[in-house]
Length: 259
Image 1 (tube, rainbow, N blue to C red):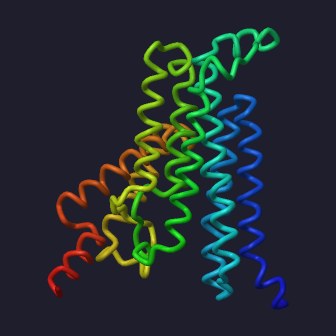
Image 2 (cartoon, rainbow, N blue to C red; image 1 turned 45 degrees about the vertical axis):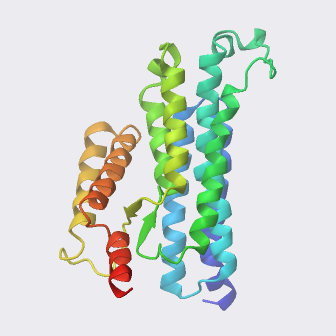
């Protein structure tokens, strides 16, 4: 394998992630939440393998790191934000869905649907922080953007009728939106599925969570089960923090002991 091809395999996978995000955004604009989520899942798969291939081929580079963040910003920031934007449009402007040919959008009447893009902004901020944060080598601080995107995509696919016909849906979405924006840039430690080895000892939480994820996805479906998985991921991470079992918490405690 030539050095040129070897060096660019991870970048090709990253660009595939970016393209998946662009296609997901196109589907989100048309209201096809199912296809948008499928494209986000495809992008997440490429995102997983680009880092793995870079480590396996030993071709990690600063360019690859920055390119990865740019791709993630589209796939896990812009695409899910557009999905939420569409849902808010349908709730705030019922004619947008029922009689699209007669629909007339008045940008001065309401700005609510545009609040969806706060998620894209906070996703970009989270990715920028991640690139310079040396604490996140083995775990995460704040909600990872792929997890946030899968949560929103799955939630919208699971309950579209409820979101579009419930009087409280607008408040429900906005509260969740603000919460997810906060979690993206929060200092809450969250465990990562990064293995140094595959032994049960030291990886019990990771292995257990993978088994739990598989059970949920088999039970509720590959598209509809993700919001349960991600909500559980957050609650488990929060539980580890509150019980002092978080790796970041232990690191901070060790530093305080040294001081």
